[in-house]
Image (cartoon, rainbow, N blue to C red):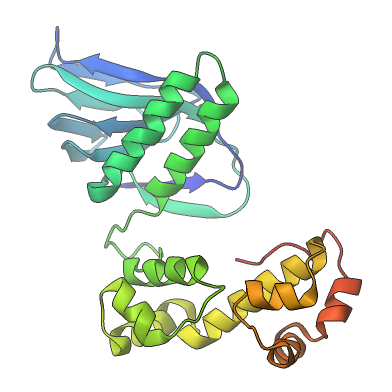
Length: 264
């Protein structure tokens, strides 16, 4: 088994979380949880085998094993890892995730999230579940380089930059510099991954956020325009009509819970 299917639209139910210590009395453990997922973040070197697949374990690696899967752990002396045993409801969008990944630079952040989950578990299981949910999303979005349909890391970084700076001026060259690639490379990658130009994506996200603010808040139309990086009110009116099919006043008047959310 090299990959598994993950559902993250709803928060997990965390049944157990802690720091596992192994390899002290035996160099090999066999483990199976009939009804629970296993999430591990490793601090040691060893190996994990599932059926015919053998996955090297290194510090900073993270694994996700689905329920009712027999796993064999092979240790090289005392071995510690964060573990979480959890349930996931199979609903919403499915994501294919490698069973074992190198979290690399994300391993420190994952360790912080899992540490918070472990300490919260005895007194606040909902807080533990929130920390684990955040960790699972980070694991699911690690760049694997295996063509599994996830966003290219440069495209993900560009989208994150857009979200963080949506209220200010944005240009393709500036975004490319922030990501660390050329304007041409970013343009090509972005269109291949999303089907949109970078400029079209920025415009779409600005108007999706504007629709949310118009429908869900009492901010003035002028304030909404400024909040999404379109300070000129006339330009904002034109953009709303073009992208949303109505003027800002009409979008606000038609606002309802079903129309208020921002589309991803």
